[in-house]
Image 1: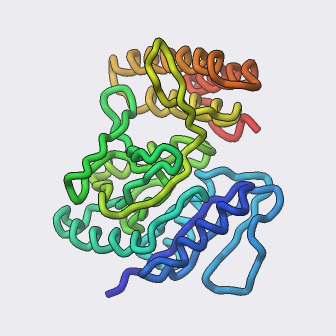
Image 2: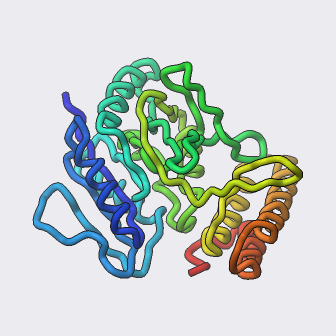
Length: 306
């Protein structure tokens, strides 16, 4: 029986990216039934049409990624879909990406006794041509799961949101993505909760998706060349807040203490990076990092930096 698949996109301000992502989804070798769109822009990015293949929901107040994904999953469950294929607007799957993911799911669900939660493509950063890693939670922190191109697939706790083909059967067993995280870390939390429920989250090496990942720049530090990412003050706030909250939340026993230490170390490193390499709004961005970390330790979530 053919799987019933819906796609989902979170949109925000970039009309060109939105159109390209939508076109890439519609150009799949296996047709998508429908695309559920949450547009968080002040002005609508896509023209409303009468097509039954796209549902556009406009939220000019910006409900965030977590709430948007929750709405899409609730709708997919209600409408009887088998999978929700989730995307950020900055992603372009190759035209056979879904076909490979579904073939892999059918094979691996037998191997894992129907306990596959998310199956995801290999995401390639368009700007650096490097693989964007999924994550695993080890003791007191989320770390990147090293890409292994020599296998057909490998397991991680949390693939990135964009490109994730989410099993609706698995989604029914846990609470939806946490809307109060707003942006950043939603995928870390959701994937890990699926793993804790006994599901396997897998990355397929032959399924490829291009993804525009942040704003990387190359710098030199102590004669060593390295790549760093520049973020807006908003992103600096939510990255520091949500990662601090999640890592100290999931760490157990004494590892909660070491997790706190790691988050403070990350905060200091981020402040130094902003001072050395960020060309503008240094004070605001440093304040965003400090406040975000403080709120993360407090567990103060929600849309608190606009």
